[in-house]
Amino acid sequence: MAIALSWEKANGLPPEVARILGPDAELLLAIPEHKVALPGGRRESQCDVFALARSLGRTIALAIEGKVNEPFGPTVGEWLVDGSEGRIVRLNSICQMLGSPYPPPANLRYQLFHRTAAAIIEAKRFKTDEAAMIVHSFSQSHQWFDDFSAFCEYLGQVAVLDQPIAFMLGEGMKLTLGWATGSAEHT
Image (cartoon, rainbow, N blue to C red; front, side):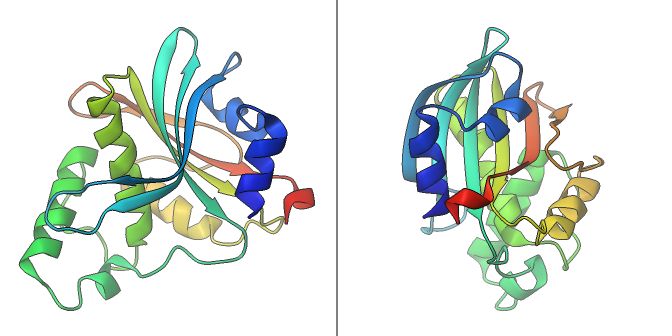
């Protein structure tokens, strides 16, 4: 509910999300609860918001993961417990998209992997210049930021609250990750 209130009130990109994307970031399109097919199975990644945005003359496919106080769900180790062929294919495919080693550490949160993959997949589908995955958190104590930070570290990046983490993927696409702290008024 917090994310819906925030995006509705902003009538565009919420300012904390816009700051991560760039100085002139503008919303082109937003779709709530957007599902993105992933390799290796039938279960999709459901973005709380999927958006197309523009900043500095570049178009961005943006996957938003909204959080208040709930965790990111199971760790990679917990998610792989049954070790099904589809799960192994899926995680390996996601790691390839991210240009990261497989298997990833078992303590990382699987949701961060598939939500980031959703941004990359949709960037390719919509032929955008960049992909971005932003955690739009309304926790004023930054609950679960440590999980996000560990995911960024696995990708060779350093997470900073409310700052973009931008780097190039192996295939030449720019990926931006970010943690945007939303206003407490929406919780």
